[in-house]
Image (cartoon, rainbow, N blue to C red):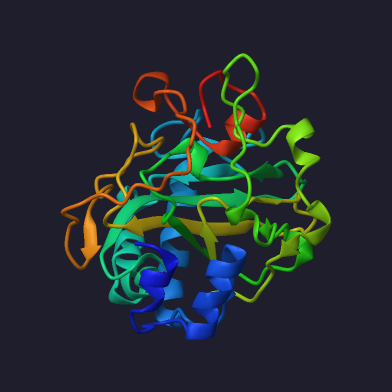
Length: 299
């Protein structure tokens, strides 16, 4: 569906003005949407998994571990395929609230794609360079939206997500080096064409939602605070968006329709998107691993 088609459907969770803001700028920050009990359940689930990660010595299918991770001081950079790691994550991701929220920006028929919890830890190791999401998992159209939630209050010190307003309607950049190796970020020469001075940092209180269109340029500075910044990110698309290749980190619910009905026709956006490496053969850990060149074929 096109944005004009989507906006013809009544707003369910967001206001019409918020939806228009999202389609104009490629992102949206929304506060006060998620009930406290739902947020508390996500926090408890994350605490349980952090405790479990103490017994993990190397990155695996559940955790991408940071270089300073230890049993005494667990520091996973990511909980991978989060909806498969704790039932609270899937209850949240598939809830009526989140399905209706996604419908506000992708249309009434909603497909689930992927899920992760990203962490920033004190010390500044988890900078995320400027990038776009869709080059890692191209679809037949650009409806996919990432809906993130801050578990705790996030100020500039915690390294909040930052976006480049309107960049979703601009150039789709290559996230591979000249040799075809996946890097997961926009190269220095290409960044000269990006208006970085317009960047909008999306801080907010606990429970703040951040919606990112799959084409919008975004990243985050290193954290300077003395407390971690966990953030759950779930990706949804319109039902008429179909994956082009294997997803980087599939879940047991990838491709599941969580609202409405399956599409009988695909919507094919004429704008091109370069095909990434075949993740089903080469593997994928996290954007942290790719941007730090820890493994040749990861994003």
